[in-house]
Length: 202
Image (tube, rainbow, N blue to C red):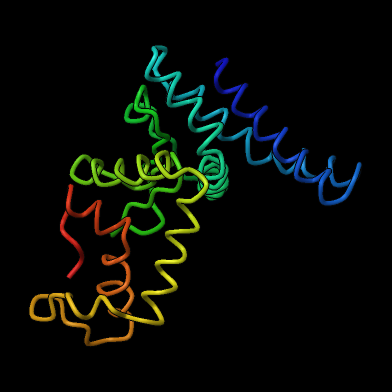
């Protein structure tokens, strides 16, 4: 419960600070409300599922997620809020003590998606892959999301991945496959995760 309250408070303070920097007192109030709307669901999920274990490792992960990796945590909190708005369910059993918030349903039934510490639509067969993304975010902190976005943009407009792509087993023969079979599994964060667990889409 305490960690959930602290988490929500961090989001509110961050929102208020950014709002104040952008627009004085009104900005502060608007930012605080936005922080509350995003932070409260995340704090509730953290408390409700017991996401962070009450030991040294759990506290350490919580601190990392709310300092160095705060940008990723905020992005994950927004992602979680949107899932909850459309009625998706928190997976308390899988989330408990894991250092991540799991949701039963994903964006697509074909893929799990992880943003920050929020993992949606995963299964035991691919959870280790998703945990790699959680680790990547914690390791790179505020650099993680910009580096992922930059790699997606680069590989979309300059498909150098075609040089090492497996054309025989995963042909790029439709426009949608260019992204699903080409760009997506070759960006650096996915390529690393697939080496650790999972088979890239074909």
